[in-house]
Length: 133
Image (cartoon, rainbow, N blue to C red; front, side, top):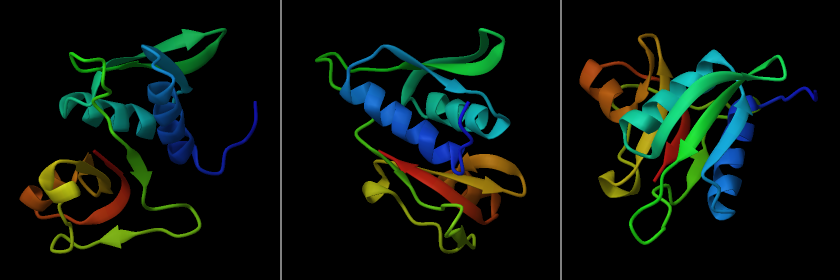
């Protein structure tokens, strides 16, 4: 098992690659943060489902991808914003809309992992992990 410096970027890249390859599902090594990101993607309708499971004794998160009626992927792209080498923090007034409101930003805040929209509503800032549209 290789050690990842940026598991979130790896997670997003795996989703991106799976979508390009038209896979129905993918497995990623489990972590609490990735489970939270998957939860948000599901709540916001970007993936069909996810479930923590075990594969050969390793905990993984199985993500079920979602495609539209014409087999177009629901997720057009994902972008990692804050990286281990360059963290990006936003105050509650700096959270902007993604793709003119068509996308979501995923943030870690003192109140947990949430979308930028929720963070604005809750009046909290935090680290912006990624944008999805």
